[in-house]
Length: 439
Image 1 (cartoon, rainbow, N blue to C red):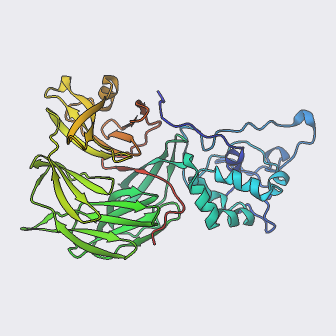
Image 2: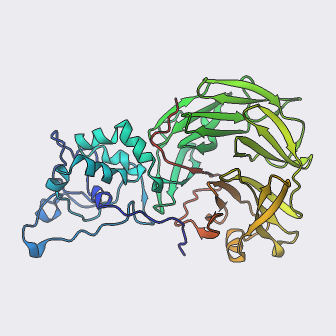
Image 3: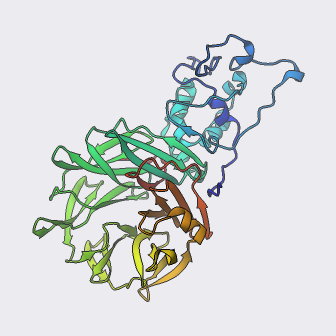
């Protein structure tokens, strides 16, 4: 059953037609795609005019009607930057070569961001357009390009990454070969940037990258350079980002909170988190505040980013809560997601929202039993939960499934063709943006 949210936006046949271009050698110096016969696996190159890209049938009775598809690939198609499925679609090279500049820009603006790399090899004219900073800025503002789910895992110590586009309902593979060869794990994503932390030998390091532009840089070392729980936030208006490292305990002492500011390119020291017993290291960033769950004292620890200090919020958790995840929503909304119930056959998944005025959790939704049973067949089965823009995603590694809940529309839906690669995969929401800068 495919109940994935989002609808593919309409576009011309540019996406489908571009699949029939062979990447890496399909351009002329005059800026026009030249005629080339697509080669399929296991077949030799054909010289027949019927198989040539750009061949024209002059007879009206033999004209082939080209049906356009929604923007992107078929629902179950998995693409990579270097491997594409080539449908039998003929291109009229004379037409595409003579398109007015404004019309060509409008068409290319609707191409999914994961296909821009391949289209740069078509011709000099397209390469110039697709690398223009103003074009990339406008391309990033098209709302149907996101959000996406980014899945990160390691296969024989080689980092792997797949992205599921919710609007296009398709998986794309993103190569991470441009990243350094040290052990790292996913911190999170914000504003088109992805943050990783890890060990380069015995040194703890943090890096931030843009998977689309394949640019990255390592952040300078912290004052207390130890493995920390971290979260990254991007300020689009200020064109900057910050990385917050919470005050963990190292040895017999508590480490101070440290904040990296990309504008200053340095870490600053802040207040040490008061001694608390944390429920989980999972954090949620909402309205310039960082939240963590605590058992003692019971409630939440809140870190105000601007003044840089911690305070306790005595928000008691719902009764019989077995496990809980804090999820940040829009407009200062903070959600608590978790299983409730003492007996396995009576468990259910529920969602609460924090009433900031009354400092209480208010239930707003329950996962329907059929989804709960399909997602978690065992009472002790591990699941992950994260959110963005009032979308909450549930993943179960044992079942290899992903479930999405739209808080605003109150709609539950399975993620189509869910490609959760392994039990140690890490997942987060990701918004592909070419204009997201690491500088």
